[in-house]
Image 1 (cartoon, rainbow, N blue to C red):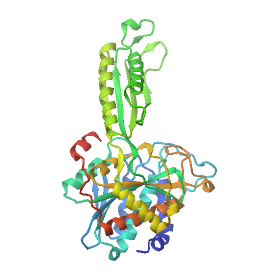
Image 2: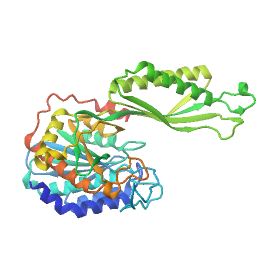
Image 3: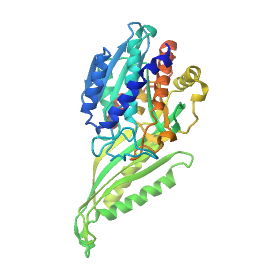
Length: 414
């Protein structure tokens, strides 16, 4: 397949699609118009779609010839971030028209790339063997994750998958570059949201109240001590509180407090340890301070773990097809990804696509109001994805040593 030629012909539509999705972002589990647009494009390609409730969209491209089945995924939700119309140095070429929401993580680019890849594969089935499943995932960022519903549907329907692929754009990798790492590439995560219930009262008589703020202060101190005492210094583990809500006035003790945060790790055992100790400390503080705890939200995302066979094949293929200089050395990323669940079920990789382009003003970090995409990087992303997937379909790597995780257990915690 003449990948560069085919991709070059699709660049205008690739960029137009990215800008459309950027202008009309929708939050997690609210991606209805986004999915309508995706389904319309897939239908134009001659593909039939399945919309999995609260999961997203699946579409299969069948070459008509036996072979491997590759699952290719893009996440489709946006963030509750009010966008800045200017990036690091210039007015943005596309700005959100949905107040309070923006594609400040790059999912607009992910969707546009996967649609382009799907179109090229669908138009040239005579040039490859096997099947490709396109998966457009709802709610990667927050709440009820769409990935678990998609993975469950694939299992329930008896759909066979040999290997999987995804990419994430990265603000710190230059346009025209790709990074494919071995093993852990994005951290696992333990998300939590807890309400502490006490007894409200007057600030002059704390003895007549049960102050949930006192309990939280004790809990936070104990958690910080745990990180220093019990986690090996050569293991990467961080945690933070991102939300804290309690009371309004200085002389009124509130009846409850709600806090939320996350822990990040590159060893799932460390994440399990932190989760267990989190609950033990919480129980102890509740008993000590007389409060009760309600777990409002708790999710465990496994480390996004690249298969070494797939990663080596990807690097070799990208170097051969696009040039060795396209491969970019980088460190793993402390951000987390629901695609880690797919990679625990199927061997595969998550590659990084560079979008940093000072000449267009991109380079602000993700989840930032100034975040922007160097769109030329998406072209390299499409070329690399196609080169790798076609190589997998042709070479059919041996995955007999891959150890599949328990899907039921994974889904229960997502």
